[in-house]
Image (cartoon, rainbow, N blue to C red):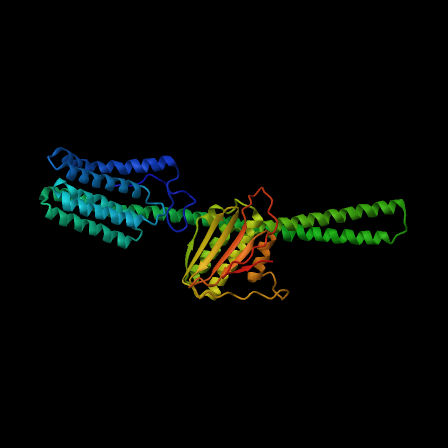
Length: 420
């Protein structure tokens, strides 16, 4: 009996659906849902026109008003995440039971049409949604019998009660649309990453090697000219050759910096790799849509540091945690961005390589060095009971701003904070 006119945007949520694309779509969804509540006017008119006790009639009308307001608050916003969705659905069912018990003669069984519709949209599991719809039908049948609804009226509303199954199909259609948008986005991001790597390899293999040869030849020619007899002409030639060597060295340095930029990891790309690695290891992934939405919106060095942390944290989860679930979240806290990777495993902290040992710059020790270089900090929580949590924090610097100077964060009691 209700639906939504919102379209699923291209940047869909990672695990489910996103909300309305704009305010106009939200208003249209609420208005379309509210139209179907006109079915309840008959019950209100019956309470208002028949010679009932005023208090009795007022309570009945109040129940219908509260039911309608709750329905309008829940059903049009079904794509949005909410902790109270199931509690709201249970409240709708309770109000329908209460109204049928005390106001059954007013056509109260029509409320179960709306309970069925809400069940199909608000319950994420299709199996439980189908059970909720069948439960609504059972309640409709029972209260139709106890309130002496005629057979004609009963059969006239049986089909609308089953509208909940249509709502289950509608929800599934939107979920498939969101998954398709997500898959297209991941393919585009992966293709862009591969193209950047190809360009970096081509620049290194073609231009880099040629410039290295020019630099070496120029330096060799300058040394050979220095051995000749001094003179104005030879000195001028030597200076020109030295300038050629200097220009080629600078150009080679610039190309290497450009290649480093092309190879700089991003959160969006690392998330795709992380999700694939966790899924292959049989670990359920729950990731935050902010990881993709914020990727590319702040300083590249800050994002690269967080991307390295994500890669290393997921590697540790796969290798050491023995976890069944992993939560990846990116949140903004004041003037900083925090990446959180938490699992429900053994809480094991992988050992970091000793300072100065071979392999320095990798592992958790290497992550703390990368974060310190951009003014961030690394916090390790091995006492999650169960599980282990890694929190990497960097300043929230926009792409056009300069990074803040390195900051040292003091460890919190009961936690291990790794800084340099």
